[in-house]
Length: 305
Length: 305
Image (cartoon, rainbow over all chains, first blue to last red; front, side, top):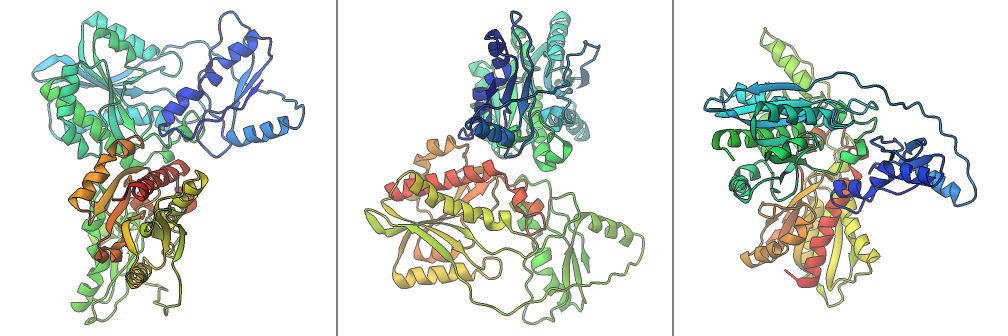
């Protein structure tokens, strides 16, 4: 079965379009297998005008046979759809994907110990792993270097934060969130109190907003009292929902969650595709994102949340 | 004289940094010549990390000899500055620039005649000319195609605007604004009443705001009453000053001026340099800019200003 569902270009937020199209990659193979289909080809979840395939998670129900499922690029999808309209077509899938055994790996953590309330943590993070199709420069090298940059900025400015600031590069986001889960388990076991966790995992693009979840009304009011500061950084939108996959497991501890919201227009051109390389990260956009993160982390480490 | 003034990367708005650095290109050659200098080399006005030179207007006072003045890239500037710190250096300027005679050219105009108040004009525009170093895809091919797109969108949607909507591709912005001046002269001579002129001339990047000038308090209030509509397009900032070089001469007729404000982070990597090509315009960013322009033009053509 070939699913030629085109990523919708008419949404202003490409993340809305991603949410709209993702079922074809995530659950369609199971559905096809359940009906006796022998393979699935999907049109990539991508805004791009080129032919690059975009990979990503596909899940099979335990009750079905795992049939081959691949993603192809936008232009080839159009060609196949055109040919299919004219008669029967035959496809041969040659794929070398396999699921390898798990190996031991680690989150990477750096911190600046708080001077007044070291037992309160302000976390900033991204994830170290990426799909093997490219470097994962935007997903999520950007979030990792921005998190390191938050610590570096505070140190360079000679700021010893009142609360402990921790930069966490999570491992294994793309394949099961094991780093995020292990981190939350560890925080619970050690009784670490995280008052804010902020993630950058939407690309190293120019920041437009900070999304939140698990904020109390009082916490949201405090964030919004800082709106004039963020506005000077061209960050206007503090109303959106946001957080991050890796910090998600911390939510059960009551931690307020924030996500850097970069401009979304270019993300799904490179997301999970071979273009997600260093050259497609702009140095100013990346740095201003780090400035926004450092600003929020500093404000919360000084004034609480 | 070599001016190694680095484009400031610490401004959030690169246009502020451009304003800060532009004197080295625009007036330094005259100042050097007045002091008996024989040539000027400037560091390019650019945020980029590469070595591309960025061209642009240089003006000589009538009272001085026109001495050679060239711009070099950022990395070569650093090399020369390093060498100059260690002792005398010698530079040979080989330049083929010349000022050619003027030739006759034209603005290109398309319009949709208004159904109720055809004598009131809503103008949207960009400029056709560019520096010869590249295509000028962002400066200002983007503004031209966006202006055409405003007309195309209204036609495709079957909207006959109440007021006349005019898309103007101005000629000769980079070298003296002659197209803009001729247009304003013509509008005055014909008694055409322009109630809004909007320009896109800051690159085809994702839109963030609409800047204004020459708006009355009442007109600004009307624009801001439409803020929720623009917010849905991720356009938050209606507070900035803006307009455009080409529409500037219309200001004397009392016309309210607006400028599309795209995200400024990448503009001065490609501005007036060989990278300002089609490949460096993102299709979604360009189109969303056109959507914002079409939205404002439609609102004003329907409801006045």
